[in-house]
Length: 156
Ligand SMILES: [Zn+2]
Image (cartoon, rainbow, N blue to C red):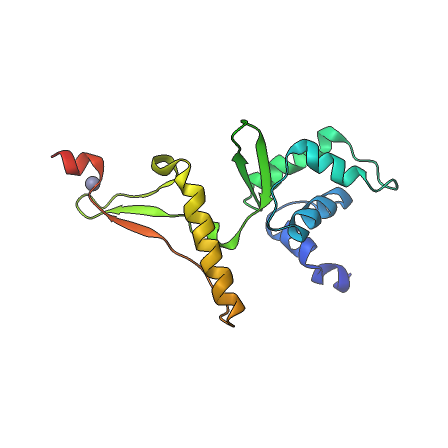
């Protein structure tokens, strides 16, 4: 029981209000073991089905992936072919790049305005974090804020 509670995957599931099912543990464990790779539903199904001892139900798997995404444990992106790809949530994305208007003081995420560049920005943040971590820096987090005038204020 105590060993079970100390398991980081169980702890993550519990902290996000999810049941600690065998499938939940397998799926989240898979994403955490491959933090730099995003997977489509089909790729995930193939990967998890490789173990002949465990039957993977497609519908259960897809529901679980949706749920993990809803609670913020997975990041979902739509690729160039309009296919959804899932990845364990990179630490740098937890603080989303945002815009602060210096006139009306609106503060909003940049994802909508930036579209594709959002991903480049996230990647750059992640690379900076990794570079610092390799130098021995710890407990890193990135906060990207762009300050200026929003479109409404700029037009006034
Ligand atoms: Zn403004």
